Length: 124
Image (cartoon, one colour):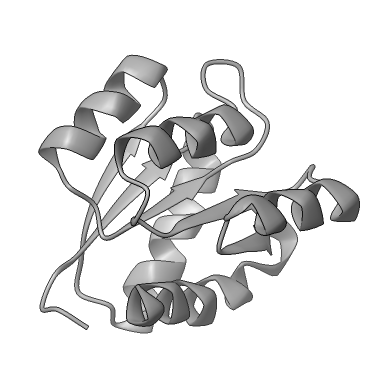
């Protein structure tokens, strides 16, 4: 892994952002993290921040996970994309993984985030 891993997080819930940040920080990953809530911010950060990996909630009012994934596929298809959600059904998760999403992390099981994040970065 590179010295600083650039992680872009698409999440509108501040409490969830804090939980995700805590998981990443506690793991010892040396990360530079940007958080976005809107489509415009998201597209801008993909171009300017050039993340190594993107984490996205699935259900949110300004930019849902499926749309975020499709935008990422158009703008930067090589960046790994993980869904971090509490509301994603198994069938939808499987369909999105078949479409190219690297993995799915359930918010109630955030302890699985870091191993999946490391694997995504390593495989990219």
